[in-house]
Length: 159
Figure 1: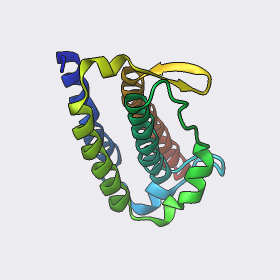
Figure 2 (figure 1 turned 60 degrees about the vertical axis):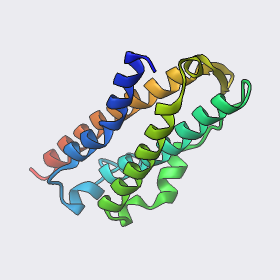
Figure 3 (figure 1 turned 30 degrees about the vertical axis):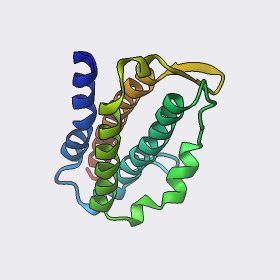
Figure 4 (figure 1 turned 180 degrees about the vertical axis):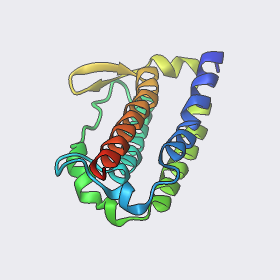
């Protein structure tokens, strides 16, 4: 495994710490608050990251195991709505994220350098394992920023 891949896996594993840090000290009310009916609460964002972990893991495994596979797509809003995350305990959601994160990290650590360049068809566009892997790390960062915006909007709404 290359040094870059090793650093990326470390960054991938660190996403859990970053999520936990972003929600530390929030009450259940704050975690469940939505800026508007069509926007996600912090709990829903974290639940979405669990869903996204599943989908990215399946996509990467399909690319490694199958020649140029069509990759699954999903309606993230429908998945978030149907998860009823605001009724769940945030620690349960985080434990699910952690379990998937650790299992996927074990898999990613076993990949060989050639696997990173393998491609799949992502809704008509070619995508590599490396792009999907890095994309997930960026995806978490995007949603961490969303959590910060939600926290700021919630704080402003109580003033």
